[in-house]
Image (cartoon, rainbow, N blue to C red; front, side, top):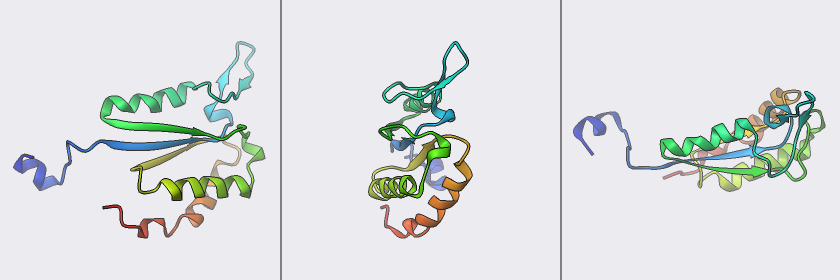
Length: 126
């Protein structure tokens, strides 16, 4: 590492990793010619394809889908628990997490996960 890199704490050699959790919903769906939004397991959407392109920036991206996919208004506390459990189990294996879901319950999900995972950063990531 160059002296300049050391000064700024940059780690050029280390690969990054992101876990994408796709629950379903409009943000991760594709639009049919009819204008209808469709969720399909195993059919990567444009948004997820964009996230997968992060590999060009030395970032490993893994996608986990809910099976079956769940539309935004149908998200429940059981789904939040499943998301929090997955993030907790994978916390040391990934540098970041992206939840792709419907917009109807996005704010509620973000709030629920923030409380469910509030002590997760207390883990040693070194």
